[in-house]
Length: 120
Image 1 (cartoon, rainbow, N blue to C red):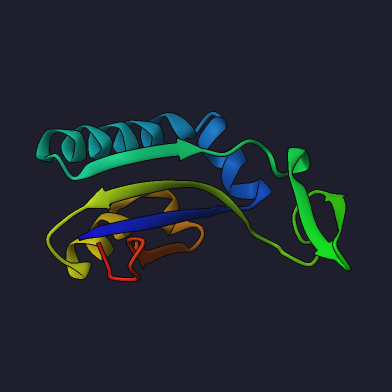
Image 2 (image 1 turned 90 degrees about the vertical axis):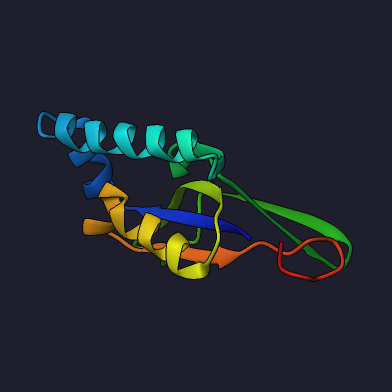
């Protein structure tokens, strides 16, 4: 079963990871990534650029309206993801709980659907 683990950030969490105390957290992340790669559970992962480079597109009356940045009222933003292929939802939740940034912000675990609408 494939799951997307969505990593949420805010300005404070990014500064923790890229600040002077982030080395240990990055080492934990690297170790977990190596484990998931070795087990074959890691399908894909990427971090996303700073939300300031985001474009939001909405179509109104067949006209695209494009604005900068994520939703203004959001305190957290979607910062990256992992796609894992594991045996159960419980395993996907376990992986999310071990991701270092889960100590600071939310991690969302969501099954991925195939084109028929069935969970993969």
